[in-house]
Image (cartoon, rainbow, N blue to C red):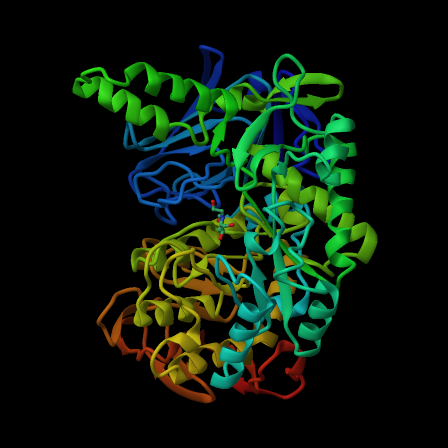
Length: 634
Ligand code: MIG
C-alpha cells in the first residue's frame, strides 16, 4: 500500500522506520516539474474533497483553502493567517472522490498550497530535489493513517502520572513559589500531579544548572515534593550559554559540538542566557553528549522535562545586532523620511529568527558541512531525540515524561509535543481542538496546548472552558506567560467549579490511559474527525467543532464566552453525559441537532450506542487512583 519515490540523495531524517524499496521519482503519479531548484507537484480536488493533515498547524481540521509552510517557527501569534507553527509535520491526506496520503520526508521548507491559488488544486513545492515521497492509497482514511503510522513507528507512551493535572507558569521563581502552588491546590482540594519549572530555576539560564539560592538542596527538595505526590518538571533550552568555566559550554566548545558558521567558527546567537552555542544535534556524538547531561537532573529525582526554543529560536545574532546598531548610528541625527524610519524599525524587529542568520549556520552530517536551511525542520526533533535516547538507555521506555516545542515526524517515538505560545483567546480553544486529530495522524499522541492560554490575561470562564477540553487531552497543563494574570485554579473566585472540572479528568484517567496505550500499540488515533466514523454524513464530514474520542465517545467543548450551552450535532443516537465533580447525569438523545446546557463546572461528553466507558473515583494524585474501582457509564 505504501510506495516510496526517491529523488536525488535525501538526508536521512529517521522519520520512517520501515524499509521500502525506492521507486524513481519519475514514476510519481502526480504532474510535476522542477522550477528554480524546487520540486513542484500538484493534484486536483473535487469540490467536496477534504484535505487532512499537517499535524501542528494553523487553521482547520480540513486544511483546504490556505497556503501552509513546513518551517518550524517561534511565532507567538497563532492567528489564522499564519502559515506555520513550531512543527513540520509533512503528512497530508486527500479524502473524497479520491483518497490517499502523502508524506514528504524532507527537512527543509515545503510550501503547501491547498486550494489557495486555485481552489480545486493542491500544489506542493519542495524547496530542493533530494527527498522521499511516500504515497499511500487503497484504503479508508483510518487505514491510510494506520499504514503511515506503522511506517513511522510506535508512538511514545509517557509515564502514567503524566496524565494527571499539571500546573505551570513562567516562572515559579523559587521553592517557596512552587510550594505556594501546591498549597493552593491542596487547600482548594483540587487534584494536581506536576508543577513546572520554567527558565528561572537555572543559574543565569544555563542548561543543567539549578540556582542554589532559589532551590537550596534541590535533590532533597525534589524528593520532598515526590513524597507529596508532586513531580517537578524543569525546562531545557536548546542554546548553551557561552561562559568560561561553565562545563557544558566548555565541553561543547572544546569538542567542536556546536553548530558552525561557514568559516568553521562556532555560530553564536543571543537567547535567554545571552550569547549561546547551539549543539549540533544532528550528530550522533553530540546527541549522546547532550542527552547524558540530563543526568544532572535525573540524579536529583527529576523524571519529566520540556524542551523549548529548539526551532531553534534565536533572538539575534552578533552579526545581525551589529548591523542593526550600525544602521541606527548611521541614521542618528538625520531627518528620516518614513521609509527610512520603517527600514530602521524593521531592521530591529527582524533581528529574531532571521533568515540570514539561519542561512549562516552549518551542521556536520557524515563529515560534510550542511547549511542549516537544508535541515532546519529536524533540529528540534534531534534535540528531543538526544534526551529520548539517553532516557531509554538509562531508564527503559516510557519512564521519563518529555515533550518538545519544535518537532518533526519521528520525534513522536520518543516524545510528546505541546502547541507553544497560544493566547488566552476563546478562538484558541477551537484551535487546540483542531490540532488534536491532525497531530495524531502524524504520530503525536501525547500532546496538548497551554490551557487557559499562554499570552495575555485569561478570564475565569475561559480557563474553565479551556480546562474542560483539556480534560480529554493527554497533556493537561495550565501554563501562562510572565506578567499575565495568575491563572492557577485556586486564584479564581469560587474555585469549587475548577475542582469539579479537574476531578472529572481524574475520574477519566483509567479510560484515557487505556485508549492512549491502545492507540499507540495499534497505530491508531485517539482523536478523529467525525468524518472518519460517519463518512456518508455531510454534516459530520464538515464538522470542525467536535471530535470522536477513542471508539466510544464524541466530545464537543464549549468555546464561546457568556453562553450556558451550545448546539451540537449527533451523527447517530447517543447518550449525552454530563460530568461535574462526582456527579454524572445521562440522557438519551436522537441523531440530529440539539441544544445542550453546559454550565462552567460541567464537562459534556457523548457516548455511542452500545458503548460504555469506565469512571473511577477521583483522587488528589494519580498515584491514589484505583483503576479497579470503576463504574461503567452509561
Ligand atoms: O521566549 O521559557 O513556549 O512555554 O514559558 C519565551 C519561557 C521562552 C517559550 C515557551 C514558553 C515558556 C517561555 N519560552
